[in-house]
Image (cartoon, rainbow, N blue to C red; front, side, top):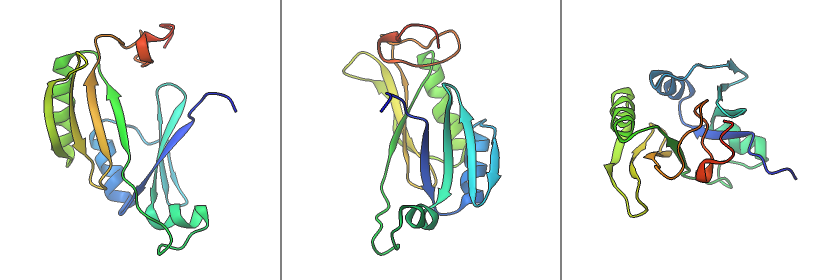
Length: 146
């Protein structure tokens, strides 16, 4: 298996509400078909929104067998000010701020929000892993091509 993550599927209660939330964050939907909304994001990856019932059915489980799970994603930005601005944008779009941005033990600056379906997002500035020229993030800066 090649070392790659091609996409993340977020289970949602209300597809249209979830799509509106991510659109309010400035994301552009690449597609909405068959009950799934997809957003192509930097780094050749897709984030898809899919109703929880569809996620369970896709796996082959009934809703009684299936457990909704919280997932935490990380969104790295170029500066501390961008952390604050992104958290404010998320809150204005309907997110709940879980932890306001603070300096963290590892030397960065981050805060957390929860989207309308309960998924957690960290918004962070990591001075040890700056974003590449195209806005890509890799731990320790990677090769700098992204």
